[in-house]
Length: 362
Image 1 (cartoon, helix red, strand yellow):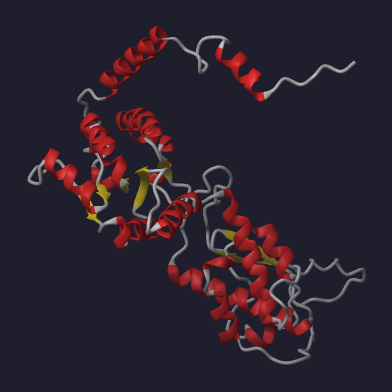
Image 2 (cartoon, one colour):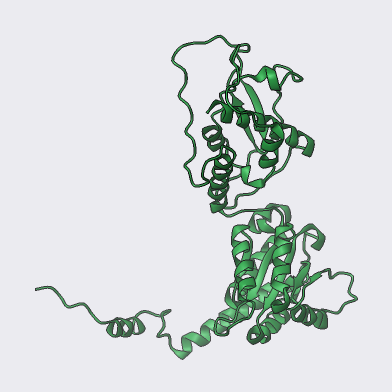
């Protein structure tokens, strides 16, 4: 005979009467926890000297809804010793609170941008700072029980923070915990950049790479006159018979942070089908959505060049790859940029020619 499943109320009652630390903690246990929190707060708010100047780090935004502004004021008063080490930005009311407590004439304090009120576009201005790569973290005390006329702006700010992998603290508990990390990073200096990487580098969500690949596929389909929703073309199988080529060595073409190997050029190959100008392809390739990994690029473009001599008559046989740094993919998605603007534009043009030849061939 199967045992009858306990009701939710019975399970909840068992949880309350369980070990310490669960919901049914006694007054003495809560008082003890409050004492521990007070001790930890005293330690983290003690005066210290930061190894980073405020100008060396990206801005830290402070935002609070109306019912959360008293909590934000208490938070600023408690953790002023840490917050003053950053360039503080935020909405109008929050910035007024900071300036009233810290003063406006202290040369040691560097204020960031003062945004307008949230319903009037303040959240959108903070999101713009993030897109301009000058925002490292957001402390946003959200009121979960009130309706907001600018809810779309709030959602946009939080979504972009997730896209950019920026530190976000949506309530006082997470913000207080983050203060310990910020203090530790400021004390350790260069060795602790990895503790708060979004204050020094532009990061991205792990989902961004997949999005960029999907956008690249859609763009390639549109250029070929197909539907954007069509699947990506598969890489061609290597030819079974050996053919004579002008140059037996492969050429390396640098594109952003990846290096793509282009197959040898066949001798005597002729173009068939309609011609597509380099300008049209290059213009399409200027978007950031074409920045994807080497393996995905190789599979997408199918770089079997048909006639390199017609379009590259002003270039030498070998193209020297531009030295680039490897892009760190994974949890943080740190983007590095080492190639110059002129080199990148030149390489994008070369890749555009490869795309055009692939389109003509198909």
